[in-house]
Image (cartoon, rainbow, N blue to C red; front, side, top):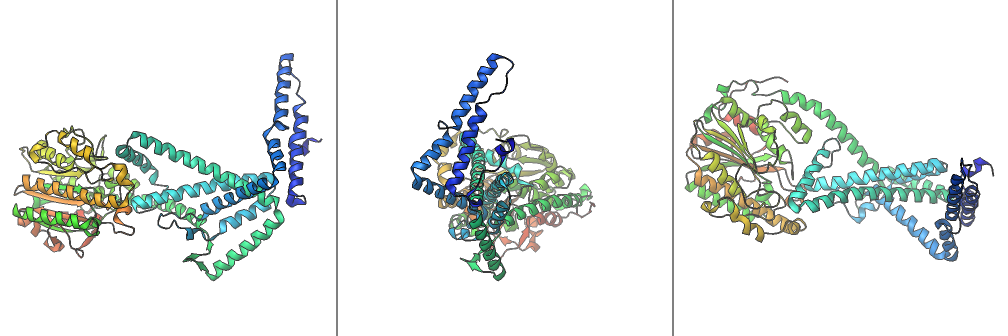
Length: 624
């Protein structure tokens, strides 16, 4: 047999042969010719190598003949033609379902319904046309590439689902890879290292499995189409005509267009999102260099707060839904009303409004930095850009005056945190500096009540030459909201060991994570706990010169706040000195700790400049 015939394409039924004849021809080529090739070992330099070559040849011959799997499979097909035909049909049907499913898969969980798959994807029609036009080897390459493309499409759609569910936005390939290690760390802190490792390995295995299955499916379909080339060509023509007709007439089914280009559209959106993100970075670099108060002299910053102890406190996931959602609101509203009354009894007054957060469901540091910098920091790249520069933060404005000592209290920080310099903090107290010896509460390293008492004992309660500006981040209301601490006597806190029994008796994180109703209920209870801890601390330790500003960093995840929920968070200013609240009278905020529904809503990035101006700061802009 000439050498070139060994590499020629085997006959196909669609090329004028029946399927049985094609299988026979294919078997003859892979069987008999295999024996010929296997039986002719090449020359060896020594007898030993010749013997080994002969043995290897015999093994190859066995594998290619009746002792090999392909021939046994063909023999089984011959003995059981009906079962073989059913198996081929089932395999082809499954392959088609996988390909169509990947092309029509939505990128949000609410859209994941059966009707979403009642569409004709243009990508399937085009793929069939390409396959039918190619010879065997290029067809195989095209099928593999098509399968890998479906793998990429499925992966980004699944990532979109997760990001939409937790962060209220789609996945951004240019920005969000850095968040995946944070997600793993969250799972580890919440459910344990073993679960985190299993989830990570499972995710990698899932992607590889999807790739293998998709490539196998596309190869199978390309083989079937080529084998039935005439009928497949007619089918592709009909499908293409139907798609064009439905698209031109705008025909719909179950509320959606019959003619779909979902797969190509999803990849196009991700490509555009990546390009826009790269462009945005260059624009933001210029924005971050321009600052309304960048050249303001120290003596003209915050003159109306001199002598006051000012505390900026963020309550994790404290969002508008906590105050307005029918499941969470009753308990939270009672807590806010009771806390307002208790503070009034202690001589404090409060004003409250709304801020629209730059983030949603997570990435709390984006909310913190947006509030303090006056810039809209809604992604990790913007955060890195601004925190690496010298843009004036609200906390740094206090440090710049030289009139305040500045500290940060961050029980959620468990490793080096270079951003403390950008925030203008003279001293940072992290999870290891507060003397806590009790149990962790899921992600939260310590209960808010203990963190505030440690802040009082180590920082706020000490005598000093200057007033204090404090930046405090409370973490007990961090998801998954299980277990939740309970209030204990302030004199009983000690080193935190008092919380051992409370943590042991609390809900398990795995039980709450998997139950939407429980998640919403426990989220509401966690907000009640955090607000109670903070306001009781203020009643107990606040003075005539204390000014407390507290707010949420973002709304909780969509599964708790609800699909389509706003990004608004409550913000309150509390003080004994009436002159402090007089300075913000023109803000028209609601009296008390609970803002009314129609209270003013500002972007979170507007707070810094409004606060600086309200308390006497003079703008001296710096140019970008």
